[in-house]
Amino acid sequence: MRKNILSMVLALFLLFPGARALGTEALPVDMGGAKAAILLERGSGQIVAAQDAETKMEVGGLTRLPALLAVCEAADQGSLTMESEVLVSKEAAGISGPTAFVSAGESIAAAALMKAAVMITAGDAIYALAEAAYGSADACLAQMNRRLAQLGIDVSYANIMDADVLLSAQDLLLLGQALMDSGTFTSFSSIFYDAITHPDGRETELASSNRLLKNTVGCNGVATGSSGEAGYCGIYSVTRNETTWLCALIGAPDAAARTALASDLIEYGFSAYESVLLAKAGQALIETVPVSGGKMESVSLGTQENAALLLPRGASYTAQWELPETLAAPLYRDVAVGKVRYVDGEGAELCTLELFPLAEVERSGIWDYAGKALLTWVHG
Image 1 (cartoon, rainbow, N blue to C red):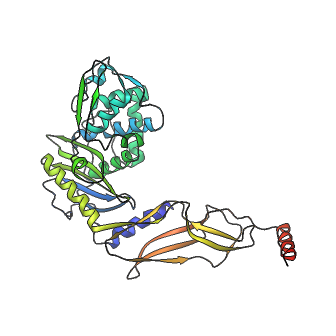
Image 2: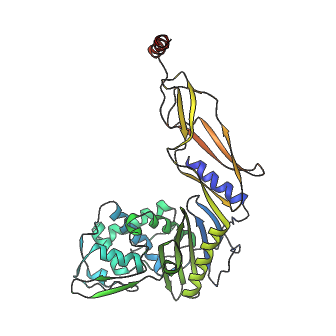
Image 3: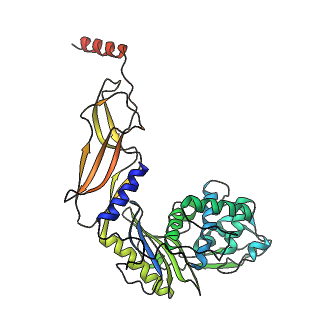
């Protein structure tokens, strides 16, 4: 099924004029002086626009995202609870850049540190959480590099706050998707302005640089960063009516240009395309198909994973079913028994999904036939 989803994405990529190959081709919106950008619809996994998205560049504070991902996923898995008290080390307190202004020796709630980590990618908060979740920065580093490899991001960190790492817009997009899959991260990612209180009564105000949180309906993350060398960079997620668009950009000349490009990309996605959910894993696409020679007389068919189709607005599609009129037992949940092909108005194939029985059906034995015969005789 994973191969089918990939085939679906590739088919869409080739068939629709709105889909663009990764490279230097111009985006459908004004780049505003940015160096690279990419736009993806999450449900289908379809990239519809990109410019220089595979080129690795400096990305400012967004180099902290792998460490943030590691601590968020550790919290998701229960290795760190938000009620825990975290003792801030000298090393954590010494991290420069965006900071929660924690002090060495300070004991502060993990929830407060996580809020600062997610809202402003506060380096001291991320470092302290990494030590608390993994026992040491080195252990967190090992997990970061493993996770980057799993995500298909070809880079290796020398330390958890490695500011010299180069990342591409596509790398940032992958990190953004992984962060938005974390329940811990999304608990804080929609907050635009807040504060944390330190044990000594001090308050640190937190203001996100993600302006879309404030002025774009449905924005729920993810992160921004900047530096003199990198310019203004960001990853953005916006969800409306169960459709989510993500974009990543690198090197805008200023914060206003970064916000404008992100907004234009997101709105282009919503206006030019619509996402159609074709199937939900484990739910019936066909309610009843007759079964011969089985202990069940019929079975429902569905897919093993969710499947979505991204279409230009106004485009039509139809389903073409390929399966026998009657299925022969035995049937197994993990063995496909048919296909459904989706084609556009001109008959061109958009994607193909395999169909699986939603229940196992054993072959009937002699006693099953005898029992059926007896029931037929009794009910005459």
